[in-house]
Image (cartoon, rainbow, N blue to C red):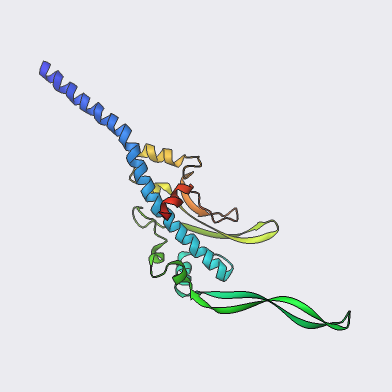
Length: 216
């Protein structure tokens, strides 16, 4: 009987030791996984943002879907221009004399491929719609709209993905805590996103620490 009790106590000690270890190490491992996956997701969101900004520069609006955006990168060119001051003489009916008129002349110097400017020889843009680390064929959700701000109509876009899709294999309690973050040092809310459908903004909702990591 004594031997059985000793074995049972040792088993209980082992269980408690494991639970204590898990309570300490699980959040540490979770943070490590989260930061690695978020960095990969944010890198793709930045590629999408750069591509959308290029699309708007050429077309005056944002691409509605990824197929249009990828086709644009494959085929479009940026126009390289140069502005210079100039002037010419024009007859003024009021004063009945020729008067100098100042103007700005825009010269076209050439063209450069959008793909070369944004990605060089890297073809990662062809899969930028796919969410890194997500299970299955999960893609970023991209929406565009036209909103009115201060009497002007402005094109906007938003690209997002649920945190649960990225952290699908992590403990439920830690994912729930992650989804409820509200801090300048964290990715707030239950999504990672760039852009906005309510504001004229192309910012992401991640803290600056991820920008520094990507730069390094």
